[in-house]
Length: 116
Image (cartoon, rainbow, N blue to C red; front, side, top):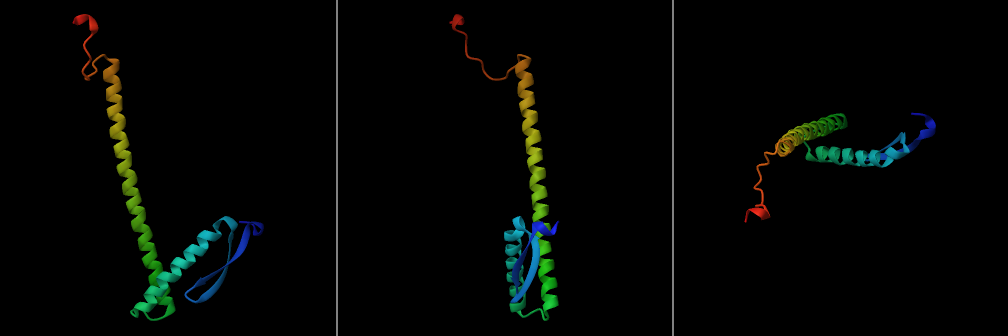
């Protein structure tokens, strides 16, 4: 990433200010990420169970990473289910087309007007 493409962004994480360079089109995402991290760190710190900012940061990072991995797993499962459904539908469509081409359409045909 060339310097011309980056802009300095100031983010606040748990009452501390950090200046970070990022691409202009990533600025909003970076600010939102910093806000999310700060909120999570604040929750952990305020719970009183973790002492020390390093530990708070590590626990927050582990929690966020766990959330990400669970979401990825769910997304992967949903993609797999969708692929299976598409394959079943494609198979049904192919079978219906083959039956129609073979003249063995299983749908009830309306009576022809000459047979009455």
